[in-house]
Image (cartoon, one colour):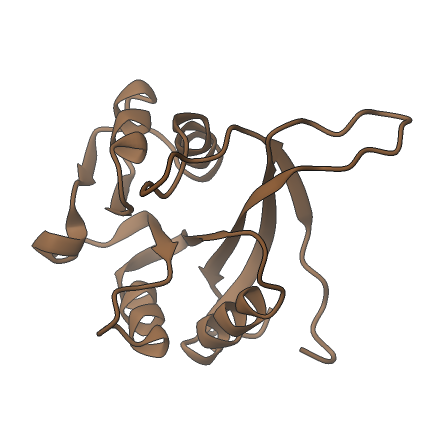
Length: 173
């Protein structure tokens, strides 16, 4: 949005997800290790077992598996991870408002979407900000890492948009 400061863009060299899944195991591990500490609660709204496996490997003690079917639970979380698009009956603004209410101070909401549509990330960022979240970071997942000193064509497969609460909770970053 005009006047907003830019967010950092990071490239993560991780494999693409399998069809019907939100992420690869390597992506799940990177999210868990980079965005949480041991004993942090993670709400898993993804398709596939990758995030649940990463939580176990990283020795995180609590999470909600299949939260889409079970609800979001009663406790606040340090990390909420979801794929995009949402279920057809879920509104983006309502989703982000609920996510904001479930985040602990300093917590993050990570939205994973297939790379390719140049407008979709903008729409997701706008919805997140309208719900009072700040756009913290954009992670670009590619099959191969960039080569230092060489012009590299990245094979980008996933965009991860990371949101957090602001101190004032107004969504301005």
